[in-house]
Amino acid sequence: MVFIMKFITVMAFVLLSVGCKATTKTSTAAATTNESVPNKLSWSCKEMFGSSKELVRLDAYPDEYMGKVYFDGEYESAYYRKEGLKRYWHFGEDGKHQIQLKPNGEAYYHDFSDAAEGESVTSELTLECDRN
Image (cartoon, rainbow, N blue to C red; front, side, top):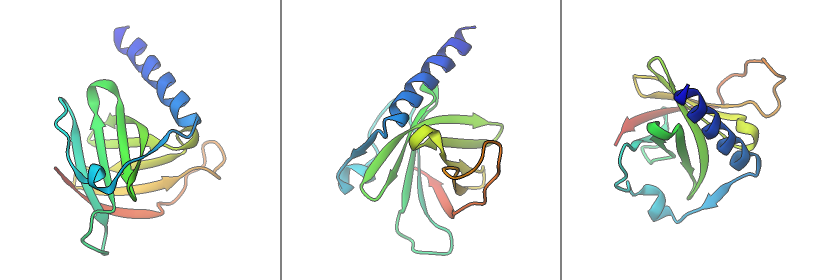
């Protein structure tokens, strides 16, 4: 019961903040540093078969079901969840953007903005991620 209440509380917070387009600008330096936060997990991701430069950073706070997706010097708050061995970040307006991270470090970005409910979409970006 406590888990369900915590989940509902976190989802309500995420939906409210995501629905308001809660995008926060940060400096590039801040986006690439790994702050010392308890229970924080972090991955540095680059484009698969592309540049070796970090393109996206994913932070997760599993105890809170929260995360951050850093891109281009900015970040968006995200709802984070782990399902089996896969990890997911849902962000953007109404959580319609998703990054799925597989246990082998491959990640896929999906944009459900124009998809009908229940419709599947193909990945728009494939990333190779390393745990920090």
